Amino acid sequence: MPKKSIAMARGCVVLDQNLNNLKKGLEDRNIRTLISNIELLDFEMKKVFLSNRIVITDNSKNLIDDAPCLDYGIITTEELSSRNNDLVKLISKAITSFSLWTKRHGYILTLKESGKHKYQELTQ
Image (tube, helix red, strand yellow):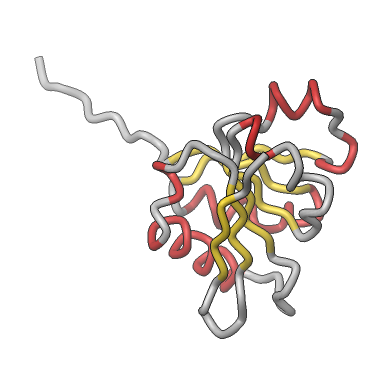
């Protein structure tokens, strides 16, 4: 009997609903994507929904304080002017370049137009 090959997703991200136009592009790059209105999540919902995931948002203010204790990472697009499929490539490349799938503590990665992204570990 021939073996079936199984494709696994690279990982799972939570996408802020303001960036939901990126969902298809991320999934085409084999990144499983959940969409949420992140601003409405309280601490308990963040614990269930965001822990051990990467959150992609254009408004990181309400996420920074809980990231270290709930072990999620943040990719912020706040400093970018465009929100198109080039952004999908930029996110995918940044995840790989900074080895974000392997990090299990709070961090924030601020994407920059210049490509000189800013990575910062967050502490409690």
